[in-house]
Image 1 (tube, rainbow, N blue to C red):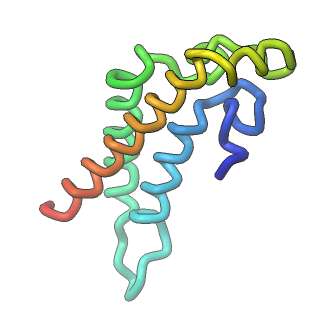
Image 2 (tube, rainbow, N blue to C red):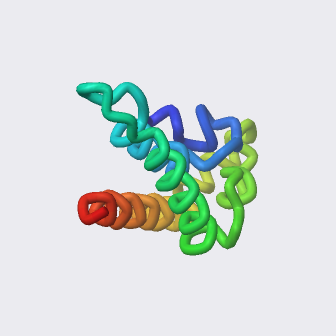
Length: 112
């Protein structure tokens, strides 16, 4: 999933941590499920909750990497500075927040 970084292959698009979270939800609740069990409604429910919480708790409403990180991923000087500075650590924190939200949602799904 490393290619999610930098906003999907360093294109500055949707945040890779957000896409990774949605991938986890899709793997857990997406189709197909064993024995004909349908959980796609849970997939949409938890996807919606995750996106809302991610925007509220991790990114001040932003979803595009270029806006969150403030990096033009085509500019090698900006990319180098990103990896050497606070922006990289902020991205790690944001990824941790996404993981925490996903963990909480998976726990919530066990009791529903």
